[in-house]
Length: 478
Image 1 (cartoon, one colour):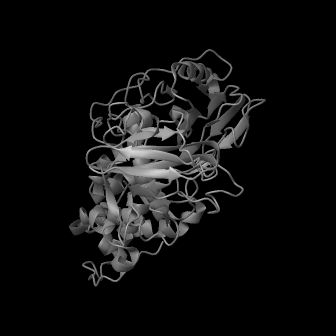
Image 2 (cartoon, rainbow, N blue to C red):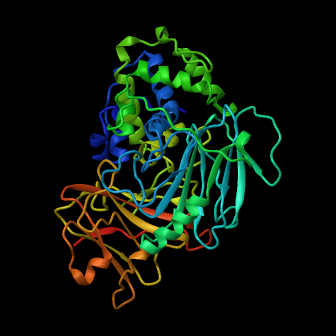
């Protein structure tokens, strides 16, 4: 991964400064490199970006599993966490949560022993159970699109495991010991559909291989009082200095090894004291930069929105990427998706177009709750998907917005009303547009906000967002 030093220096000025400039104007700025001649600094910046997903996954695991028994969005290691209703505006465990599917999730350590996941017959209901390794790569994704709706059972094995797979069970090998099973089951949100999905969730089973076919109850979790359960995970990661961050990264590398494709990066890591399988040697890191490294590195991650060279498209004010879930050596893209959408799927399963501001003039204008906006889908041009679509409202931190009707996303399940010409308007504003239009209302906060569309199982033939033959309309101010 080659960093332009000018770009990295600019990124260190922060996201707010970066968002005010176009890519061309950013690159033309005559910015001096304050760290010229200190190559280890830039190596450390690259190392920070490289390790950002693994560190974030671990911090997420700590917060999610630091309970004695499953409760809400949390549950101990090896316990299935079954969200029974959509999260609300108080939920900050994971950035950019959704209000379209009920999660059935778990963190497991397959380095000690394989785990077996059983999924019941889902019939015609849309679902997917992506499995993420410690680096946020979706290494397998059983679900409606890939494996059909029938009952299915998988054994998830760790690096280097060799053993006998039970009859009728499919082996999925994880590249890392840390695995996050991030199951999603579509639910309309009505009491009747909640009940139906709850029954399916209760039929999902997760057991260690040694307990397969036996009666087994997962043991209670152990609560660590030193884990911060209040601060958002992203903020916890971002407030670490370089020594704390790299110490944790080195520890995680012992059970979540780099891939063979990471060989060049592994050589760079060694230059600053990070050798897979060993503790961090902080004597190799210049102490003058322990706070600046995270600042510059995270600024560069977020600046990737602007300087992505096609990784992030910008069409009608909507930025989106088809490079999610599987990243190879695109470490910057992987870190960006971790920062703004941890748990993102492969593009064949979901695309997440995001709009931070109106497409207006050279720079655009941030969305403000003091204005009223409308998004119009022309007749016959609703989002083309085989799963479902939605548009979610977030505040500027990528969390849900409290509102009087408890609606965090809008989709076809709201029984959207069409205009006389067959088009469909989505009203995006703080105040209700009126009782006759409320079915098409996506409530906004009083201050700044952003929008994210979800296109689950997008059509792979035209019109399709995958090949650009379908485009999202621009949001316009009323």
